[in-house]
Length: 300
Image (cartoon, rainbow, N blue to C red; front, side, top):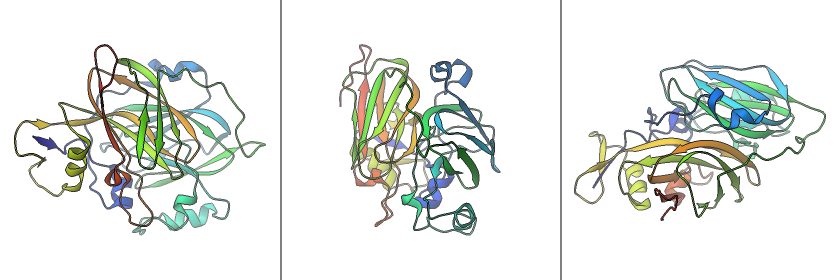
């Protein structure tokens, strides 16, 4: 079997932070916000547009449960994230620490709060996620940075009704706990970080059977020039295409995303880095493979 790396670039931010290759990811169409399930739930919206030079977004919004609508109008795939600065870090220091000369994340980076964000988004695509935003200075980060002030009278957002979810995903060190039954079709997923470290859910679909070990070997052997990494020596190649997910999420937090699943083999991945080794969590075993069948019963 050979696995194609064509669809597993980590985006410009991940290339900087993890020392991994940047690349354009293949992806099935993500829902336009106007036709999505999450967009019809009536939450306040934060619209962010990204191109190859930066973000366009409002200077400030109100704290609370918020629908993020993330539109990529550039030519590069985007694996962006959102964070709230620690109290001891002001915006001037943060922007300096994350400037174009930065070679690695600043010491305070993993002390930030990550409320969640839409997952990897291809050029011309729009991704959505519902997250809880607390008052404070936030940064939207890719290989460029924008400031978002979240204002409110309280430090934490008021409780809101949870979106109705068709499946749940728990994140922990180092793995995923995915609902025992997943029905094909468009649906809302509730993603909760039950671990002690920040994690993310990058959801991808494989064009054929693959194991978690083969996915890790694929990523660890990204330096090949032929676009595919041999795993067990035989054909055929397997393409892996992202189909949604939730960006970096801090411990104890929950966010919601929308996916549209057809029957097949799926992979859950986390590329958050370990502060001691710099290795992405996927290299530490945070990868899971499951199947969505016609009857909606996944098999590990």
